[in-house]
Image 1: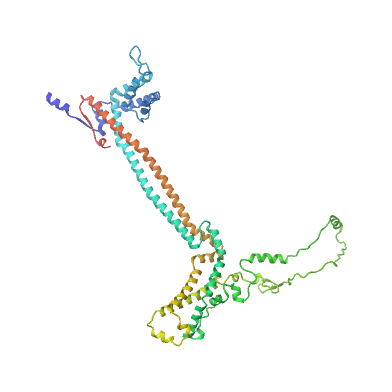
Image 2: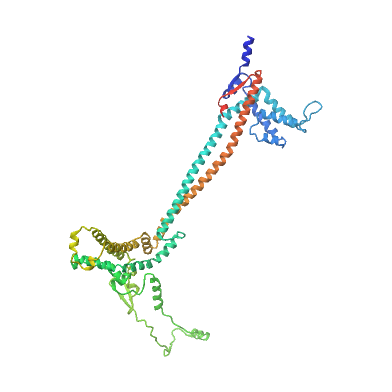
Length: 508
């Protein structure tokens, strides 16, 4: 029997960490109401901690959030080694109140093994809650950093593409993009010069138009010869105003000078009487004139000068519309403002001009295609008796003619010029154009702002991770050390038998 008992004493004691507190209470090593005793001990520990010295070893213990029984042992040992607190009186007792307080705490912990119950609870709380929470916090922080890195990269890429799109739109309009509205208005002011250059290029199409008319005349009749009236007029007279195209006379005003001319006409008809210099004596004479008195005015010194302006004639039509006319001059009221625009700027005449150009373009494309078919014997026989200018053209010359026509059409219908036409016809349209191109810039700014927010969130997650990682390491180290100390204390209760605390605590 003694041999059997000897073998049993050599067996280790295995306790699951989650059942450790129940194991201690079931074997009556700890009291069931240990928690209320621990609350009282905590109050005494809090009070005693404020009286600890400021030495480095005590500062480290002060930073521990929950001081356990084993920390109290270290504090008592350090106080005993100090000269001030380690002194004893003649009765062998410590004279320092500081060490007396900590010795009292130590005794309260050791009564009914309260410190073992508290340590078991700390082990369960750390393994089940504290350490997993810190791990989840670190994992969440790492996940946020990865997501923010990806989103920040996407936002920066999107912002770059939008800024490039903005610059591309500005380049299409021929502006730098520093001040889009002012730059577009400036380009709109320069549109007449652009149209004049296009009109100069149109003058070079005279041989092309003559070739087209001669071809149609030879293959049909004189009645079917296309007139191309607007195109022919521009070739002969340039980009004149619509009024001059209709009447053959140049208007006295232009669309840009119209407001100034109105003010000048008003100033011309204003009459001003020069009263001369009136002295104080004259003022007194005027005051002496009584109402109703007979006045004699000497008009012998007054002369009438010819200003060169004939008397205006007021004409009133059936619609009660009054028109002021002057001899030899066309007044502003007689000219429709839309007729002051040039042929290539007014919508109706510009469309007619483009119709003529597209007709010429289609003809040249068809002739170039026909010229490329060498085997078309019927066509060669058909043009055998044609004029010389119809038989001398080659596929190369037709391609050059078509290229010239294409260049003019593309220049007049480009996206830039079409927007400038609308801006000149409606000043408020420039705001819509600017808003449409600046939409890319606003979206780019939003993407940049979102990238900055992602960067700030990533930095915050990184700070959280750097704070949680040391805390996790300390908690793990404290838990392992507490596991070792509890196993030693329980082993003392069972004649130094080996005690193993099992479970997830060994995998933290």
